[in-house]
Amino acid sequence: MRPVVPSPRQYGYRNRITVHAQDGVIGFFRRDSHRLIDIECCPISREEVNRALTELREQKHVRDGHYTLRNASEPRVFSQINDEVAQTLRDLIVDFVPPNQELLIDAYCGAGFLAKALLDKFKHVIGIDWDRFAIAAAKKNASEKETYIAGDVEEELTRSDPESFRGRSMTLIIDPPATGLTECVRKAITNLAPETLIYVSCNPPTLARDLKELQHRFAINSVTPLDMFPQTAEIEVLAHLEAHK
Image 1 (cartoon, rainbow, N blue to C red):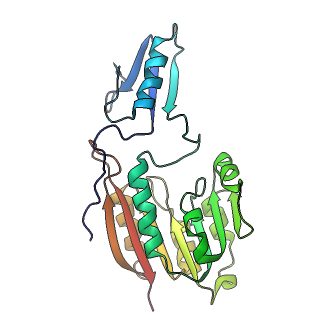
Image 2: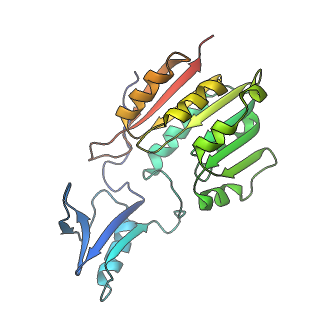
């Protein structure tokens, strides 16, 4: 268990927020309720995000609904909300992954944030994500060694033929939603038997559940918490596993 990696910014770090508008009130819902609290400024968000919030609030007759406000340069696909800690996370993964491998499978790859940082270590890279807009972004300027698939991770991993990967040096990166891995995905990971398994999680309970189910096939080298979300109770966790010899 490694020490928690801190965030360089304790405030002003979020590159996007989603606010809600209802009956002229713009803000966030109180935890576990439908009461909307009016918010003029979000202290944990970047200046550009708060500027967008101010502009939204200055509009007349804002329609009821949800509004995602982000840095102008931020792509409209899933990405980590703390840029500095996300970069640290990527650097750690680059250090964990051994060089001169044949294949990287990046499940839940988004726009290829992690896969593209690892290109020089693999002969071929496959990224999978359900978000076709993220996959379209990943395909832009992709090299010949990169293949990105818009599809369900469970379906894509399950239909893969484990025998076709036997004897190939392979790393698998998984960055699932807070619900963690389904039973089918855990089984597919076991069948694929990658030499290196990198698990990025935003929910320690589901991470613990999944690692317990995978421990018969993989050894846990390290677990690194990262303070991706300062001023909240949430934490990002990076687990580095290797297949049992």
